[in-house]
Image (cartoon, rainbow, N blue to C red):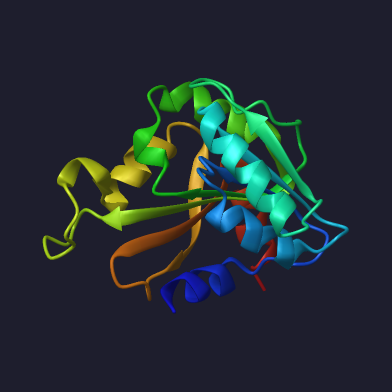
Length: 182
């Protein structure tokens, strides 16, 4: 139920170009590929070739042809510039070994209206049964992503254990805010 709630909160539309960063075996990739439909595209990025091989097998079994497996590096997801409408990082951002370099590449890959979406276990909540090393607070997200040129533009707080934070490149966030003024 919470997976479905998270996917619905993303607001994925047919035809979009999405990246599942740190896709693993492709659990979310397959669902995102169905949501964007045959005119959309999902880039599935991981730094582990074995995970991408598993994803490719799972996508073939599901007869999904709108997925591109991409072997990224710890400093570069190897995505096209300016094309990604939604960059989904589910419990992945805190694992980046070189966050500054990755965030710079992510910014380059986002389309003008693109969003970076972080799903991270709530560091503020001691009841979340995850090691603190694998949690993030909203303050941590702001402290790390604002200097990299991102701003939180939307928050979804209905998941029981995780933050769902939508970020835009700061210049895009400023344009969004000014267009919302009366």
